[in-house]
Length: 70
Image 1 (cartoon, rainbow, N blue to C red):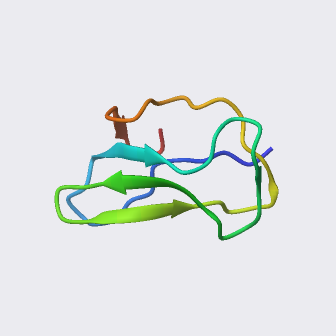
Image 2: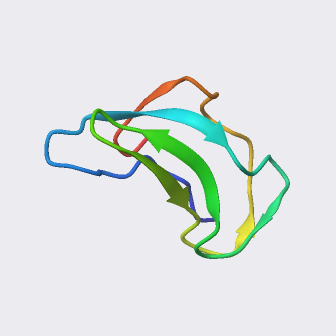
């Protein structure tokens, strides 16, 4: 099962904030679909699904800070 993790978007980045979930638990996703918007100290970006599947439970809520790899 593939996981959705906080990616490293810059050399100094240690965490990112979940701004908005586009997909909800149980939603089908295709590789490349935007599943969430994340915010770093420099940029907002869409977090994309790395594989086809079904999104499981959110481990972080909107507004939560998540460490790299979290």
